[in-house]
Length: 159
Image 1 (cartoon, rainbow, N blue to C red):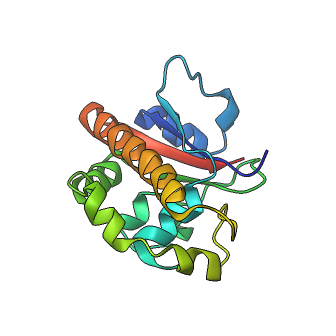
Image 2 (tube, rainbow, N blue to C red; image 1 turned 120 degrees about the vertical axis):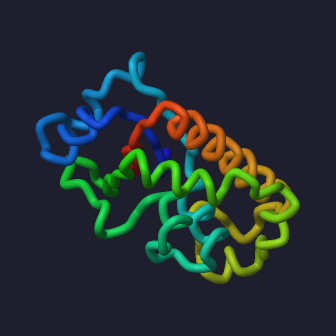
């Protein structure tokens, strides 16, 4: 199955409840709050944007938010992180105009293999893998646009 990256866009009240450990992430109603599953692409997208797997600096560090300052103590095996509504807007402003060709210009498949970036494997087709990354990056752009317009924060978690 693997480690998948998941987003849920929430209002300030729900975000504070999650941060304060008053509400467990799995208990957030997906019918009420928008969600996004980027499958196993989370580390690869992070690497594509920064060239490293460590936490990125804001605002691009908010795209796949795994920054220590935004960590949530949650019962998630692989971690959970949050973004405030203003951080979501900041991230969206920095990714909204990144085109497929710009992203492709940042893409060096051999570097993904060399650095053992999850979930790439050595015999993977480079073009197919880029298409997979771009599809998920585009979904993040759309998700952040919607969350920005609605004034929502984001919870990101890996499961």
